[in-house]
Length: 282
Image 1: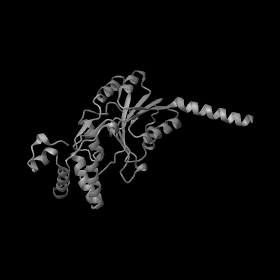
Image 2: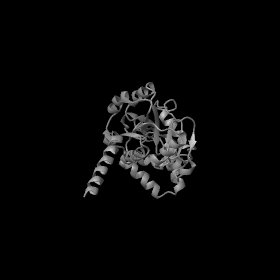
Image 3: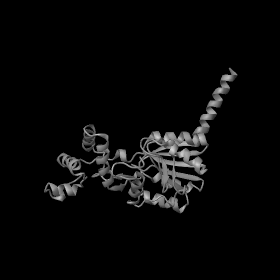
Image 4: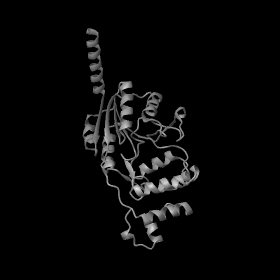
């Protein structure tokens, strides 16, 4: 009986210790994160997911958020070869215009920089060549820079690093310009590799991601490495309404993409159909 009691006590202590090291909070804006910056120091590493946390395509260029446009892509994939689909999809991807999910992130990043808090981006994005895109990693850097975000002066990881050991069908995980690109490999696995390679072990990691499974994965890694973990499950984009689209315009858009290999803006589509720009809304 005493042995059972001791097992229960040890289990409670272990669970309590785990709780002390980890916490995940759901947020819809960056106010809580911003208020927490004053409690961070040089032993803290802040990690931001990119898609749907820092940036997102404008409604006109989002490939998956609008149901009708998503359906057209699905149908297109079914009737195309893999290479043809990659080629045409890459044209749309490379043409996209991006926006900040929340403009206040610029202030957050500035505050982190002013306090010398190490900060990096962590994205699942594929790397290497994709259709007409020579390097997906360079496109990601360009997308972030187009809205005023650059991690090169924030990151504790200088230089570039390719992780050939973790290569996947989506490319080679890598570190470049303060951005960790996992090529769809588990984020915690890639981060752990970089921490070991760079011999860098912060006392605290703060991670912001829109996918709960990514947060839970890093939470386990931090428990393993005895690093205090604070996660923020950022759900702002999931609460945004999707804009309606004109089905006739979208059908024309895909027809032109297939025949002319161009992904036209709504303004360009309007001129094709002789429709006033003022009534075109993506």
